[in-house]
Length: 449
Image (cartoon, rainbow, N blue to C red):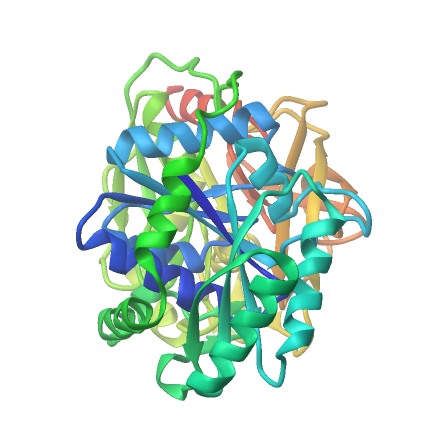
């Protein structure tokens, strides 16, 4: 049983409403949350709301068969009654103006899932019907079964708009969320503030859940999910399992480094890795491990505190100098640089990183390995995404790069993945489904003497 919660556009309240629905239903049912697209932050809200790790579904990273595998696998792990999928941007927004790759509609079609459309109804009544009609007729394969109105002025506004949509478009309106500042969520340059940083996040999620229970017909939502048919046939594994030697992988995880796809961590465990979490912010040094994985996050926000933890920085540099494998993405790349905005970092790579006012990259990425390395073989194609406001100031001698960027920007001149000894640091965030050999190659590298 499944449902896609899609928006008519960005900033229509998808995350607060979706998270509120997940939380409200979790009071009686096991709910498995999902997020469409390359997003690390919204899933942290889902996870706190349901108690189950939110997982990403993305048609740029995944085939339809992998989308079904990822969805079904998530439900099995959490033993969930319902799978609820929060969309990305507008329902039809993807990487091209006419295609489906990377959009929410592609996920709904791959899963044959009913869709509930979330619409900002501020100052709309009959025009809301026109918006819903347009979304329904653009692609008849997308099964829009209901509408949630957000930014409703009052009861009268809600009833008039509901009547317009239901009579003119023959689509049920199953709730309306009133205008209020009490359910707004703080954001910053890469999106919402990660849930792990918000001390009041549980209180906020409780408010969203209460708001949903008061204003949305949850029984109608459940009925929609129960009407969904069996998943279409065909599955494709998200990763390969080739490593048979037990290894320990240290994963940087704290307020600073939170950007990890849950499936990537599962893929490492599926390749005989014991994951040992550590905090570059709070711990004195890295744990006893065979390899290190440093994901993305906000090291620029915590640069002063990271600089103060010299014993941790020294232990990471020593690990690198011993030729042991380190894989770092985006925020991890910055942490391994010489400095962030002049605050000292690990100095694994002798280049400064600094923040800019404008985004330096926001794109899906296709890369090709130009050298054998700890995660890929020469010639392998790796898909991912990049989203950052930082730059690396490269000086001579320039680094050796692991990847040529075929789509996207990279660090410099369509190159990415700085290589030194057995360390790779890149702006590319990858997902195991987009490169199923990621975990097996990394764990094999970690297990080498």
